Length: 466
Image (cartoon, rainbow, N blue to C red; front, top):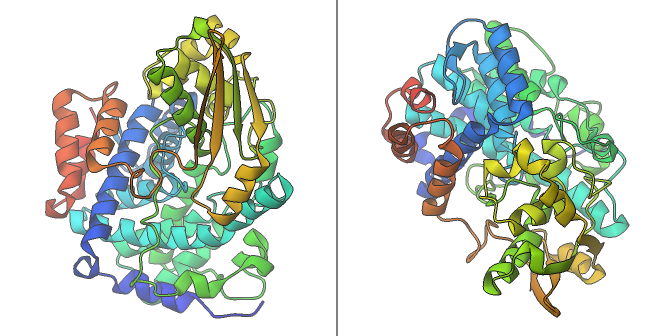
């Protein structure tokens, strides 16, 4: 494998970035992403995935140094990172690409255990997200190209596993690792990265809690990598650069593009392109939801009036049987299910995945009215624009057919679609309502949105728990 070595540039970026060097827009986007992540974690406590992770973290315990979001109580920083990662990803309500569940929990857990400042946390989160975003830009492009060309994902690919490297970078920064130990932390994290078995997960029914990548495990691994490097543990400090290292076995050497990873690193920030989710389900479904909700609200349509729905979009292979929904994860990847809960005006948020809603006979019956198809013209649109998730929805009701088509979904990082600060605050409040008092919710919003003024991260953690 040939090409530019990236480790030295990454290490300089990790150890050399300061709060003062961050553009104001980067600081604001970090705060937005943290607020959204914390809200997703609070809502994720209602999921089976989240409950199991919470039970395990409490059992494993450890030194009481880092907070479990929502329920409170402290466990070791590795266990707190584990459970918080599973909570953030529990509802699939977290932003796209799926960076936050893999990088926010490690930096929060270590930031709290190290009594870091708000500015320290912002810097570490910016570093972690930027490296993760640049890596995912290389590897996820392979998935998107295969969907457009072949109508399916590659036989071997990962989705978000590589973010462990970004997370380990953020952890290393908070631990004030030397450049040499920072490189070791990246090397350890590269060896800890889980297998790129997303295609296996996609083809398996019912959908499993491990999803496209085990968020909690990778968060735990990132913290462990930083702590081991701090103690002098060694790995291959150039695991991203050698012929037989991480790029060959995770993404395939032919897809590795080191120049794109480090080009203008620290000067141009890539993680700005965060697509925040207004709906708790896979991003592939969002444009269809936008179109359907617009139709039923504009025309005042209710479930009994609707005879059939035809939803057309891109190839969607993450759920082989769209009408089979037995688990919360099944629900997150089913077009018929999400259109059904929207039709019944279930309050958008954690309620969409309550088991009593999933098992509601009315929802089940309505799902049968929905058919899903692929539109080749939309595939062509996507081939030219990776931000596009085009969809068309046709609703037959009361003897009429209502049609709505859109190219982008709400929450896409484009003018006119990007969620505002106010919308993200409202989403956080909705997600937090089941766990926190109104006073706590208001305090959490205030703390996050003025994070650079915070003297100590433990105060932030306290605002996110009972």
